[in-house]
Length: 253
Image (cartoon, rainbow, N blue to C red; front, top):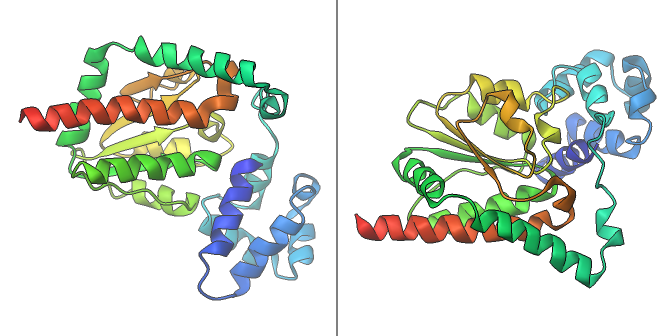
């Protein structure tokens, strides 16, 4: 549900005109807690549009149809295991979890980091995919790369991110940030688009299970899945490591 909320909010925030799609997005947000129980006809009536208009809007924001969007709201089994961890954190627990993640980062073989750095440098075009609350971290990575002379792309709208993947070549690179892997489930169209996309594919995650997807050539597991509550801080540390090696690489050329 979180990704759908971010997508609808982004659509509203980026709408230049308050057209029919703007009001559909607004109505879907107003009924977000009931979407899972709505039929296509019921949500169309709630939005005061035709069912075909709802399906066209769903395609516009990256879903096949309303049924696909509705299924995305149903939380996959186990996906929210640590959803409420933030509210339970005391200072000591926070630092313990963050330190565990940092220790994992320090144990990533330097050869793996340097191989990824080389791929970033050699890629003609880089697309960074960040989802839900980690869209901000994705933009931080974009900024750091730019400051080191590497321009990349990072869109905050899910449907625009998906469209971008169709235009990539073998000389390009996709950097995907998905901490728990929820967005890579079959409930969303993202995973199929990444599979079909050309170019090198790097995943930054906490999940040790995502390697089974056989989609990404490189996977940086930089934390424990039970430490997802400190993921935002962990990602900043990963970027520190990557950008330090990237700068060293550039200076050695």
